[in-house]
Each structure stands twice: as C-alpha cells, then as structure tokens.
Length: 343
Image 1 (spheres, rainbow, N blue to C red):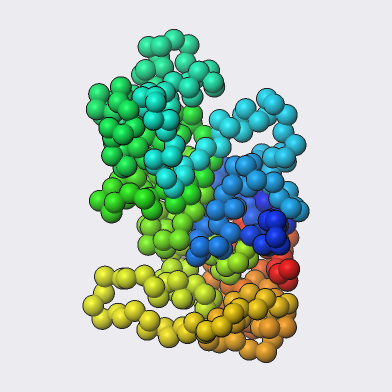
Image 2 (cartoon, rainbow, N blue to C red; image 1 turned 120 degrees about the vertical axis):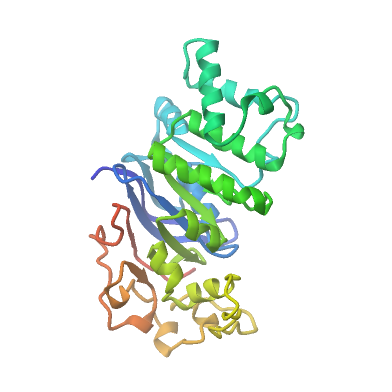
C-alpha cells in the first residue's frame, strides 16, 4: 500500500540538548484512514511529533514524508498541496483568530488561496455546508467577531475550516483541552465524523486517555520521546502491559465505585531521574530489573496480542520485526521503532 504519512528514524534535539523525539518511525497507509492517538504526559514529545508532521519543525535526523516526499525538500507547488491536504487543529481556540476580522475571514481566505470555488455563491454554499457538518448554524456564526462566540463555537469553526479544504490528514493537538466538558463530546463527534464519512486520517494528540479511548482506533504511548506501548486502543486501554501505560490508565477516574485510584500501586520514586543506556522509565518503574538499566528493551508482543510493549517483563514474547510490522494494526497503519539510548 502507498504511504500517506511516514516517519523514518526521526529524532529531534532542541537547543540545550533536550531530546524531544528519539528515533521514532511509523507510517500510515493512504488507503486505510483511521484515528491514531499519540498520548503521553507533558514533555513526552507528542506535540513535537505533531509539528514535525505538519512540516513546521525539521528533524535533527531522520525523514518525515508525506506521500513519499520529504517535507523539508518540497518545492513551492508541492508545499501548497501539503498545506491544503494536511490541516491542523490546535489547543487554543482563542489564538487562531485575528480579533479585527469577522470569522468569515477564516473561510474566505481558504477559499481564495486554494481556489475552492468559482464564484461567491458557490463559496458561500461550501462554507455553510462545512459549518452545518460540525453542528453550527451559519446564520448564528457568520458575520460575527471571534469574541462574540463561545470557545466551543470557535473550536468547531476551526474543524469546519479543515473540512472545507477536504484534507487527507488532520493533526489535532489537544483540540478539546480548553473547552468545557459539555462541548468536548460535540467536538470529538465532529472529528470522528471526519474520519467515518470523509475518510480523513486523524493524528489525535492528547494527554487525556479518556477522550483517546472514545475517538481512536489505535494509540501510541510516548515517554521522553520513545514509544513505550502501541496498538489497538481497546487492548491498550483496557489491559495495559507497560508499567508506564498502567500508571497513566490508573490515573483515569473511571465511573466504577468498586475501583479505587492507585490500585495498581505504581510508585513514583523521589529524587532526580538519571538517564542511562537502559529503559527511560527504569527509575520510575516498580518492576525494574538490572537489565532495564543496562540496555533498552525491544518491542515485545505480549501474549501475541495486537500491540507492542517496550518492556523486559515480556522478554519471553516474540519481538516486533523492525522491517515488517503490517500485522500490528488491522486497518493498515504500521509502526516500527529502533530504541536508542538518550543523550
């Protein structure tokens, strides 16, 4: 299958030596649109991954490709196509808009810059259709300034603008973290609709595993720029294998009166974490073994399940082949990684 998006051995080191991404590789098949979550705590590298996917950041090493083309080597016409086919939704619904323009400007510029319509009537019909698809009434939103709309309306307008361009890939970085709970379900439903009805692949970036579980097909768990666990979202969330994933899942306030927080007894040691040549999570892991501090674990497939976990607890399980991992995700998304020691 042709690849829509591909990251090959991508590392990003910021000024000062901070390693945001550490030799990450994964690909998304063009013919298998799905919703893939990249999750982890603050500083895990998930937003950096999103910005590199958009071409806003260049890798320190490795290559990010869209439809087989290196994002850092696109010519002007190829870059225009990228900006149309790869759209973004960011965390802050307030920062997207120029307060001196009405919200119509957000759509008018997109129509003009990408030649989406031949006349104003056609453009208006396209804009209204995109607004209605995300649950907004054109007569209640168009013609208004950003401050006259709620945060939820502003965020849905950004989703509508993305839909207007009919992208192939949508990068949604914490799209519901700054709207109230009552609107999160509406926005997530709109995103899921983009995938189900319009066949748009979505890279959903979040620290919130609850929303990830409800919207995603697959999930990648990052910690300090490396993949800890990945696979089918239902398998990973319901039965996490990696101790770090277990820690994240255990922090979710599940609606179960018989379940108490902290029941998995994952302890967070005090003191400064020191990065060595072993597993990056070793100093926080309650199951740490000598080998964990000596070398990075490969990606094991525990119990032959449709997921991988970078943990020596499963050293008797088969490892994920580095060059042929299409069997990991049923819908065609493939993932691979070659763990390396942190700088």
